[in-house]
Length: 314
Ligand code: GDP
Ligand code: CA
Image (cartoon, rainbow, N blue to C red; front, top):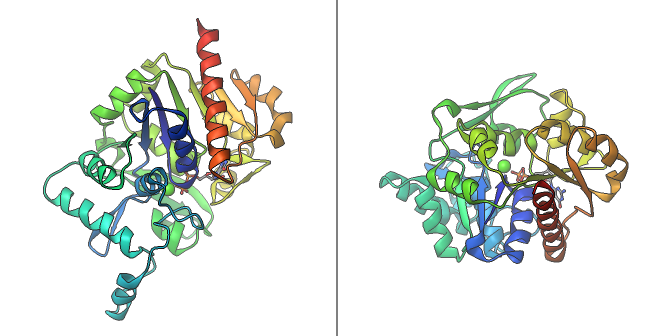
């Protein structure tokens, strides 16, 4: 069993690669749910859906989120009704949100609702929300505090981030399937997801760090920062404004003491030695996933790296 921690687009790509290397029952993807929010009366889980659509092979390749070839008639009608439709949801995507909202209203947990949706779209690996309690990433900016999607989508992640908190995280707990996956894992892979708003909320769920530390499995992370920049999104600007180094070395500093290995891009080969001196092993390999073959090649390299760390630990 391989367990992986993932946000949205960056996480989904590596999770998809791993799914191509492993039997479905040997992969569990623990997904950030601190981006989740309510809009148009529906519970929307952007990272869970991005991973689910990607694993199902129906993700929109242009955006990374949403369903390929989706139409936007429902959104158009909402606009005609006078709704402010700043958050784009396609018609097929709406169906996911409608069913999830109904299952939650019927008393099912988010974990159960996600499992049912995955069955519907034919996703076999376990897609596990980090917790069943609602948690909300709040972004402190120079202009005040914003809800995550308000910052990310409505304001195009332009405001400078001065602090990040995860509202209601104190009441959250890792779910039983998450704890079981971490306990059974032969390796735990931190996807190249945003370290501040995708991976850190997962780690911030009370009990999650204890579960990670209790696992003897090697933990390896893949750097989302390549040659000093994020491949997309605000991770680089966020790291900088929060006082972190914007490099694979900065990622290593964030995960030091928690992971035993970091996978960095060939473009960052010169950082391998300084990262090793932080007390972790380094694998230098191409990490930019442009297509399905890249995803699977990187996933294979990550699994091989984790296996070598397991051997060394013997
Ligand atoms: P989000 O929730 O949709 O923002 O996605 P994630 O948090 O999972 O991923 C965002 C991060 O993925 C960004 O910081 C990107 O730099 C990183 N990323 C995206 N594609 C790739 C890739 O192909 N390789 C690597 N190494 N990082 C990537
Ligand atoms: Ca996200």
